[in-house]
Structures are given as structure tokens and as C-alpha cells.
Length: 535
Image (cartoon, rainbow, N blue to C red; front, side, top):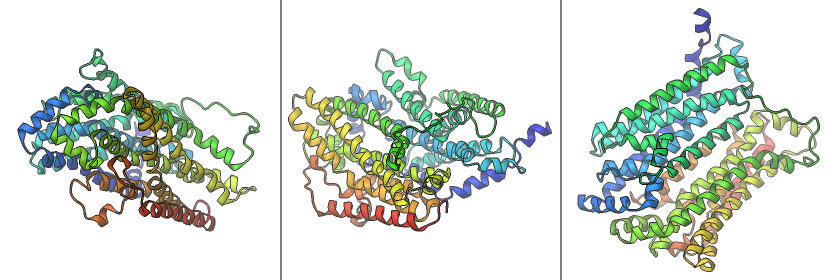
């Protein structure tokens, strides 16, 4: 028994270490999630204060298969019911991503960097790192869930149902923390674990779509955690027994993770990596070729993902706009998000405004490949040869700058082709969607610049680029609804993007955003050339 307890020695110290390392990121994510969910509830209160109007909106949403397929059916026309319907899928997705990020960061990534080997050679037990990561991630999700419930109750919503919604979202995050704890035992690299978990997130979402509420295969929703979030029915029955499904799987997966961890050696996975060739490929003759090898998997994954998303959004366009036309209150919402233009133009403007920050995620991930290579000490091996720092940085930044452009072109083509062919208006709609999409590139490049600047000057602060993206997202999401001051809105580069579908024209502000983006990139490269590696 004492030997088993020794495996958990130092868990408290490891938890404290995680909290110290993420002392800036974690509070920002907590605040972001609270603002996101409570902000949606507040916006519904402002847009639909009258019960009759909410009832009409509820009936319209129920009769729209495209909306039901993606978000699920609206189960209750109250403010709480609308909030649960609108935030359930996307808030779950964000918490799932956060849990995956934390678990991989503090388990598999630490093993790959050799830090856990040093810690385990002292008084820290073999299972301490896994236990600390699970406790921290579970605790973070529960704190977010409780605070979301408290925030909704302060708006006047039912306290019990508010807590049920918050805890449901927390349960989704905890579930993916438990799944990730198994994934990091199976895989040997943090990249493999990350791709596996992202694929599961996307796969469960596809299953949820196939099992939409009124379809012939609605039973499929029970095979997806997104479906479980919907079936808890906050503010529309509060079926707490569904949370028991989350609990059973969380407990079972956690036990499985500990069992797998006891079977493997530190630094390796249950599924061993296939050994590479004895000699490098002839194609790896320069730094750009190596960067392509490192970036190609992620780039292809994003291209496929957004090709499918563009096709889906183009297919939904006509049915969504039909429902908007018949609902005056929804016209107001679309006008706020998409500008004062025609309904179809406002729809596409709203879609692009929402996806702009999503495309920026790729830019940040591609830029931070430099940090990943440096932390693994691979950059040190590359830079001791004939490759210059600026050359290595530029080889990776090409993908951070041109990668989002390629992804957006594929998205615009798939969306424009799908809708243009269905509406027999291909020659007009496709160029407009393509042009309007590419105008978001300068704002995305600002995130590339911020990431490169932080990496070049203070690499240990590079993760703050995610905080910058979160800040911009909050400003863009609720800035118009809560009538923020112009100077606050101008903090986000995405507010400077002309919305062509809303009637905007290209002005000098976009040129300034481009100048800012490349100035940040140049300063980051200059800082990278001057500082010590791994410093």
C-alpha cells in the first residue's frame, strides 16, 4: 500500500506548479467563458424582452431543420432555454478544447521535454503529474460551470437551472479531460495526442449532426457527448440523470488512464511510433522543406475541415435566410452582426465575422510551431548548422501567413460553389464571398505578429497570444450588443475589416492593419535573432 501511495507523492506540489505556470491563462479563460454564456443570455434579454416575441422565435427555430441539425431543437422559449440552446454546442466545444490543451500541456508535453523524468527522479511519484493535471482541469471546469450558473442567476434566471447548465458544460470539459488522459498514454508525442483528440471532437460533432432531433437516426445523438449536453435539457426539465452518463464515463476513463500509465515506461506510449528511415529524404534539403514536413499535417486537416464547413454553410444559406425573413426580431440580430444590407448578404457577413477569429487559430498554431520546436530542443540542432535564425523563422512564418489564405480560399470556394449552384447565381456570389473572406487576412496576420513578437522577445509568454485572440473575440461578439466605446472596439483588428456584404468599402484602416501585422512580425524576428535559444 505504501508503494502505491508513493506513486502519488508530490501531487500537491505539481498542482501548485501548474497553477503558477498558467496563472495568467487560466483566469482569462474563466472570465472569457463567463462573459460568453452570460453575454448571450443578456443579449436575448435585450432582443426578446416580450414573451410573445420569444414564442414566435421559438416556433420559427423549431421549424427550421438546418438550425436544429447544428444547434439542436429549442426546448423552451424562456431566456434560459434560448441561452442553453444557443450556447450548448459552442461552449462545450471551447471547454473541450481547453481541457485537451491543459491535459496535453501538463502530461505528454512535459514528458517529451524531459521535465517529468527529472521530477520523477526525486520525491515525485509516477502518477503525480497525471493526477495533478486531472485535478486542475476538473477543478477549472467545475469553477467555470459554477460561476456561469451564478452569473445567469444574477440576470434573474432560475438558480437551479442555471447551475444545471453550468455543470453540464463543465461535465463535457471533464469528459474530454478524461479522454485526453487516456490518449496521452496511448500516443508517444503531444502532436499525435492533439490530432487524435481534435479528430474525436470533430467526429462526435458529425455524429450529433447525423442524429439530429427530428431525423430518422436521432438515436445516434446518444453516441455523442454533444447529444448528452442537449438531453440534460437545462431550463426545460433539468434531467440530472443524464449527468450520470458523464460521471460514469469520466470515472471509467480516468481509471483506464491510470491503468495504462502503470503499464508503460516514462517517455513512451502504449502504441509505439513507427521508426523512421535511416537516412533523411532527399526532399529535406532546406529549412523550408523541413517546415513543410512539420506543418503539412495540420494544414491539410484544416483545409479538409473548412472545405466541409463551407459546403455545409453554403447549403444552409437559403433555409436560414427564409427563417430570418419571417422573424423581425431575428432581422434585428442579423443586422447587428452582419450590417444593414439584404438578408442574404447579412447572413454571409455574419458568417465571415464569426469565422474570422476561428481562422486566426490556425495562424497562432502555425507561428507557435517555432516555440514547440525550441522547447523540444530541435531548433538548437537546426541552428547549429548552416541555417540562420531568420531563415528558420521565415520558413515557418510562410505557413502562418499563407496557410490562413489557402484555408480561406478553400472555404470560400466550397461555400460559394454550394450556394451559387443551388441559387443559380454562381458567377456573382462566388467572387463576392472570395473577396470578402480574404479581407480578413490582415486581421489574422495581426495575431501572427503578436505570436511572433511574444515568441521572439519572451518565449515563455507566447501563450498570451491566445489571450489576445480571446479579447478580440469578446470585443467582436458583444461590442455592438452592449454598445462599447469606439476606442474599445478599435482594439480588435477584426473591427477594421470592411464587411463587403454589408456595403462597406475598403479604406485606409485596412492598410494600417497590414502595416501593424508585418511590423509585429519583423520585431519578433529581430528579437528572436538577438536572444538566447531556450531563454
